[in-house]
Image 1 (tube, rainbow, N blue to C red):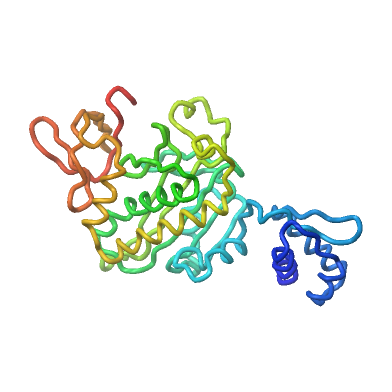
Image 2 (tube, rainbow, N blue to C red; image 1 turned 180 degrees about the vertical axis):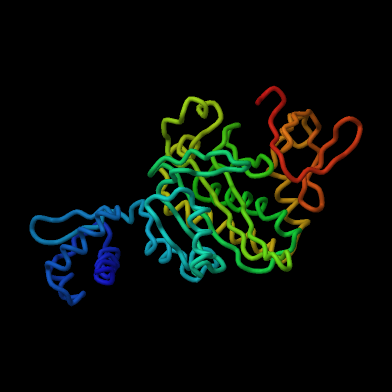
Length: 329
């Protein structure tokens, strides 16, 4: 069925917006009218906007905002990220679902998992990430190649840069980056990133890294506690946004930045990040992992990827924590 389904889809794509007769589809696919009808029904369930014509035929109205393993792999053929892709309608979190593949031997370098909905989306330090169905883009990818500790410190940074670039290319709006892992538009969060690593016990070297990205795409009724701090891309872009187009654009942006990482071009990464980093040179409130809350001046990104700050007359480099404008909790 799947082969027939995508053969029919490929034929309809050749004449988007035009009617392709049932007789043509039968002749060109070599299957029965009933098989064509079933294939079209399956495609419609996946979200492809296909109209059945009473006189006998079908019309693909547009490519549509479809996320599926087939669609992702079709778009990402020949790319590092997404050449192997999995789609799930619902998962607890894309990071957890992708990491589970490591136990079955199905996790490969550049492997991608996309979900339509996360029931327990996760952020840093055990926080949750609001992930309503069909309104956001939720995906994780794996890096299964040797990376230095230095590279791991820069990994979230380059993913943030690539995600911002992809959003800018497609939507015409460029989010700023709040260290270490949030993208903001007009002061509100539109995207979060979570990086998790598995190390080889005997050597301490990287087994694999999984990076999860969650983007608020379509306007939705955020919970009361998020209304003042969260936003969606469509509000800033002023138009509808296809999640499949956005996925392709963001993955392309991330791939370009990963090349800088793999080549250990730290100076370029820092320069690019510095241009988009929020609050540089400003007084900020720091929420440290130990529970402390202190004020400091955010100076820069350190040479090793940490956050360079000044407080109580001395400079420090932080590798974890959260920053907020003074007065915002």
